[in-house]
Length: 418
Ligand code: F0G
Image (cartoon, rainbow, N blue to C red; front, side, top):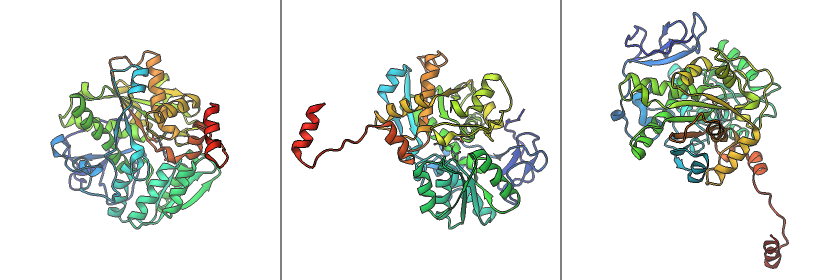
């Protein structure tokens, strides 16, 4: 079982108060001297650690870099990112029946997903280490973000995508931002196996969420939510519901809350319950939570309309499963139909999201129906990607365009008909 306890001991390998620790065996490593993604000794996941933990009064400015006190650098390769809206959705709030419901729309980041928060830090670290080619496997959004931030940083980018399973908007982004795009005849997990192999052979710097620095940037979603929710309601949210694929974001939120508790900024009771939502056809995290396992089983066959979370082997599970359990959260699987319904409902409030994002609302609805979430909870749902990422899914879920003759009379006739 992973040890995610933050300690006060600063190892001699620390660089300016930052180091990497293996969550399995506790070994520490210098953060920027050599490229490594997992522990040299036991292959466990690594986590960035700090001598000084952040306090709310240190934060100033806007966006991800407002939180530089919680990050390894003062500034990054930026577009800029973060500072996303925390929408009110009164109709869904009423229908679901909770004390309050807010939607943190991460689709409003520069490339249209939360991945930008991780990339601004990850590409900055790549520059520090001095690597050549940046690479990732992706269900689409990571590749779009990597391509844009790589371009911004003047670096070469390579992305491996599961052929035929990535939404059009995301491929268009990677293409125009000049990534080299390799379409693999396999699923996301197999693409990640290959990229890990390439990275291990020194062919590329890996910027998937296995890279611990990506998760540092993504922690800022939690920090923004905590600050804004407190400002609006005088308290922190009881629960955060988010779509889960590789479980990087789940791990990042838990890291955010562990650091705030360790810094004495919030108490254990004030940590929101981290609640994951997966598509039924790709739900290894839900399976592990329901069966009480410490590890996930790799699903070889995965399928869902929410292609962003079409993932069968969540590599961050060792960090994310304790996050869900220790905060009193849970995980829930939702069908593609439930996802599409939630996507329509969000759109009906003016919030346009891609299918995977709507899994959070669909998951909340299901947990409320089951009585797992109670009516007195204040909830924040994350919506992770923008509607325009997957125009085909949006068109399919939405109204059909109607052909009409080229005259006002014809338009009026049509309007009169129904
Ligand atoms: N939502 C969206 C829109 C995503 O693109 C992803 C992951 C997730 C949720 C899941 O986040 O992996 O941190 O649990 N997309 C990755 C990609 C895998 O390649 O774009 P996670």
